[in-house]
Amino acid sequence: QVQLVESGGGLVQAGGSLRLSCAASGRTFSSYAMGWFRQAPGKEREFVASISGSGGSSFYADSVRGRFTISRDNAKNTVYLQMNSLEPEDTAVYYCARAVDWNIKTTSSGYNYWGQGTQVTVSS
Image (cartoon, rainbow, N blue to C red; front, side, top):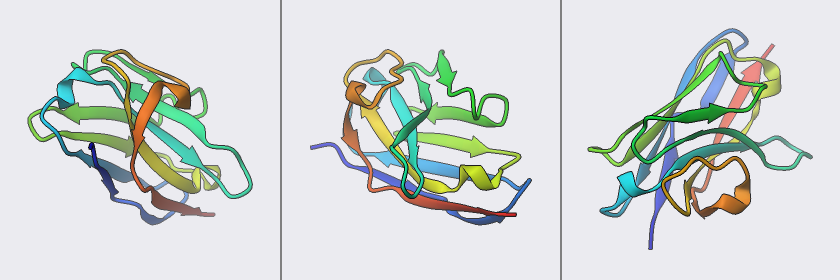
């Protein structure tokens, strides 16, 4: 059973930055793409970013491209989401997820393991 544990959420003012981390259990971390999703109150969960198993490729939602950066350290079984220039619209619970294979996935159906989520609140 794979476990994903997110950390790094919190309260930040608009224009500020946060870095989320997601630590994964298991020995085959580099064999799977990882992704970040978010869910705001009253809204559906939405894709934020994904990174391939090797870390060589990444993809972002239009709403965060240029502000957020996804990265991974396969030696530490950890994926990160660096969030800069945060906006109140970025307020949500952020989830990391492990994909079903090594390639980038942009929909939740492409992921089969999920973390418990971490709250990010951006004040105006």
